[in-house]
Amino acid sequence: MAANSPRKLPRKPASTLAEKWTTVDGVDVFYRESPTPAPDARVLAHLHGFGLSGRYLLPTAERLADEFHTFVPDLPGFGRSGKRKDMLDIPDLAHAAMDFFDDQGVEKVSLVGNSMGCPVILECAHHYPERVERAVLVSPAGGLFNRPLRRAMAQLAMDAPREPTRMARVAVPDYLRFGVPSTARLFKALTQYPSLERLLALKIPTLVVLGEKDPLLPHAHRIDEIASRTDNHVLVVLLEGAAHAINFSHPEQLAHVIRLFMDDRPIGNDPDWPEHMRVYEVHRGANHPPAKD
Image (cartoon, rainbow, N blue to C red; front, side):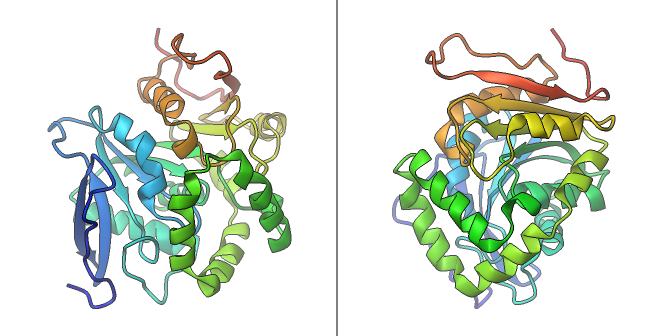
C-alpha cells in the first residue's frame, strides 16, 4: 500500500458500483466498477472534471453500468486517490488514465468526460488512437473562453446556482481536498491546452453534449460554426435546461443520449421525459457514422 493515500472506504458505499483500490506507478488509485460486467460488454470509463472526484459522475455511470463494463476512477491527485508531485497537467493525467486501464487489463475503451475530463480524453485519443474507440465530451472546459482566471471564477459563480443544491455536498469536499496550489497550477495547464485543435483532429466517433444554461461554454451556434469548418467525426447535441455538471444534474437524459450514440442510433427524445427536457442536434460531422434506424 502506498503511504500517500490511506485506503479507507466509507461506512456506507456511495455507489451501487463496486468500490475498489489499485496501485498504479506507486500511487493508490480509488475507482468504481460494474459489479458483474458481462464478459463481452464494451468498456465505458467516466473521467471527472477540475478539482473533483468521480463521485459526481455516478448518477450517469450507474444508469449505464448494466450495459457497459463501467469504470469511474479518481485520477491521481483527485478525490480519494493518492497524489503525484509531478502530475498537474493534461498530458500527465491522460497518461495516468491509460496507465490505469493497463492495470485493469483494458485494451480498448470508450471515454465519457465532463469539463476537464474532456481535454484529458482528447489527449488520450491523441497519444493512444488505437485504444480509444469513442469519445463523449460533456461540457468540455478549457481554452480561451475560460481565461483569465477571474473570468473562469465568474463563470463558475454563475453556474453554481444553476446546478442542483445537492451538488455542493459532493463538490465542496472535493475542492477543499484538492487545494489552492493545485488549483492554480492545473488551471493554467487547462486553459493553455489546445482543445479545439485536438477535437477537430479526432478520427473516432465523438459526441459533444452541451448544456443550454452552461456559462462556461460558448453558445451552441458558435460550436457549430467552428465544427463546420472541417470534415470531422463530431456530433454535437444541446440539452435544454442543463448547465455544466450534466452528468450529475441530468443523468437520465445524458445516459439516454450516450446509449443512442454508442449504437449509432438517431439522437432523439424519450417520450417519458418531462415536457421541458429536450435534446437538440446542433451539428453532425460529415464523417460521422450514419445513424442506424
